[in-house]
Image (cartoon, rainbow, N blue to C red; front, side):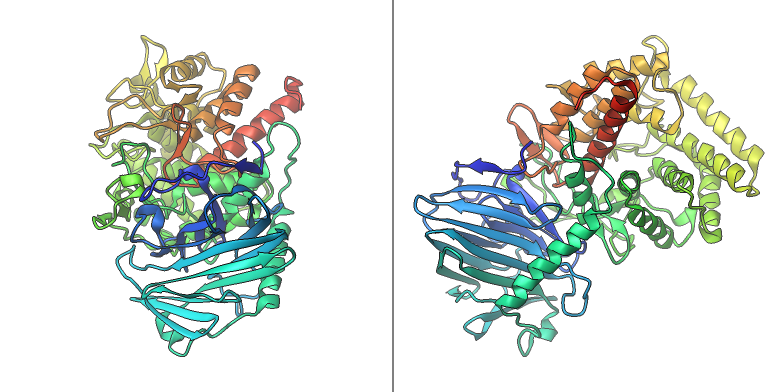
Amino acid sequence: MSPTTRNTDNSHTPQQAFPIGDYALISDCHAAALVSRRGSIDWCCMPRFDSEPCFGRLLDWQRAGYCSIAPAGGSFDCARHYLKDTMVLCTRFDTETASVQVLDFMVLTDDNTTHPHRQLVRIVEGLEGEVELDVEVQPRFGFGDIKPWLRQYDPYVFIAVGGENGLAICGDMELGFHDKYSLGARINVRKGERRHLFLQFSPPESLDEGPQWKPDAPQLDQCLDLTVDWWRRWSSRINSDDKGFHPGIRRSAITLKALNYAPTGAIIAAPTTSLPEGLEGTRTWDYRFSWVRDAAFSATALVELGCEDEAYRFRRFIERSSAGSAEQFRTLYGVDGGRRHQEIELPHLEGYRGATPVRIGNHASVQIQLDVFGETLELSWQWHRRGHAPSSDYWEFLVDLVDRVCAHWRDPDHGIWEMRGEPENYVHSKVMCWSALNRGLALAEELDREVPVERWRQARDQVRAAVEEYGYDRQRGIFVQSFENSYLDAALLRIPSVGFIDYRDERMLRTTAAIQSGLALDGLLKRYDSPDGLPGAEGAFLACSFWLAECLTHQQRYDEARATFDRAAGTANDLGLFAEQYDPQRQLLWSNFPQGLTHLSYITAALALRQAGAIAGELVN
């Protein structure tokens, strides 16, 4: 997996977005944008991850807007990489006679007054010869429904406003009106020259007299230096080693940080909505929220790498968002802690490559998913193991969570995969209820806190008995998806991680083998083999493949673990970014991108393999 690759295929079908793997992420830990290999920003939500996009061509090629900088004529080679240990993207374009690079980043500094975390900068730098470039800026608001009112203040300053959105556009490129609703220019850049484009989200009322800040070229160059410095200072906290078989571990950690909403501590699942799980479309969901489960996984992975502040701030975010009450605990929250996220469809958008419906909001916000209680207690347990005792108010919250598990563990739920049919008694959910009770008891004992020990122990034992009685297929000798069926489910690979069963228990060995063969998809894994009531088919779910690699490692099946890990790691794009799913036949990444769950699963599998290599000497770097 090389951080920089060349691309000479510049073909593109009109009205069809680029492959998902062609995109790069830039972020300021508040908002995010996706930049294509050809230099177009086709997705950008500001000022927050979950805001309406000002550039949304990813979901409708004709009407949803973009910002593009690329050599004129469309004939060029390109290569790209992130500047070391940053989220600053460098894309190099080579024509027959010249070379130029574009540096894309969202400004991150310690000064939130001048740089209020809603600024995007594009710097063009001539490397060889002279390059003619086409610059296009076509902002759209309201998910493509609002063509903005564009006004010009001087040759280098424009504003675009519409509804509750405003965008300041300036720099040292002499943009002009392509039409009433879009800007463009053709510029020449020689070796050693730099040209700048600055985009800042602002409330429309603040732009009545033009942008409040119109940076010049030296100021924008300084923004680059400050942003690089910010990312490298953060990355220096990562106590990982990139040598050997896990070269992407730092990149995955930086990507997880880029999905962290700094004001509250929330960690989003992905910065996009409605990217489909396969060619058939229809399986299109909005992932721009903070799932308790995924974010807890993310925080745990970051803690393992020494990034404890993110884990602490996420814990506080969950407590605040649920108002410190287990009764008000939700599966997911908005980045601001909001909990009303009704799922609606936007029929005016054509969808990514025609995949519809385009959705905002997520129905999972009103689902019951019992495993989130266990994930939260597991995160608190890991935090405690690192020497951080919970505060009195947080301890009361944890006790409330465990008490709620005691009362509701028998209830069916929608499970880790958020099934949209009738709730069932999913085995993974029951095991995580057991984990919540088990971790609650362990925390109470080690912290010397008074809790209803006998009631918690009794409930914990009842959960185990129920799982072993109804969630285990004695004929095959394996655990199954739910009490109501005997399907395979890759989520079962997670049950040893919380101590419910040893990785090398015969039942777990058989379950792992059944999943490894029964859910196999060209060396990767599907999530399950049960019907889910949705049209179309999924690809391989990459997090599950990394879970298998981790499970095989703990079972001391090192050759299989390494092969599984390498196969899954090989699906990342040239920048080391993973989507949620992958189509092995077409070799395409699918679903929302980049996906936090995949990156953190990559990290935990890599760390397990590294530890196994150090202990057993089986793996050689």
